[in-house]
Amino acid sequence: MTTVGDAVLDPSAGYGTTLVVAERMGRRAVGIELWKERLDVVRRRLSGKCRGRGG
Image (tube, rainbow, N blue to C red; front, side, top):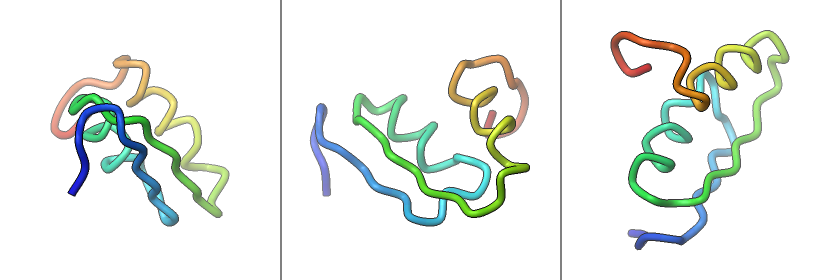
């Protein structure tokens, strides 16, 4: 359980869903992902430029 302002670590960030939700809930988020190809998707999602389901 976390509260507003806490940090959330996602050691397998994938496409950033946990990071996006953490940000929306007022948490600071750190994600680690091995696949560089996913980085652009995560950046778009976090910047709000990706729309649609989960985006």
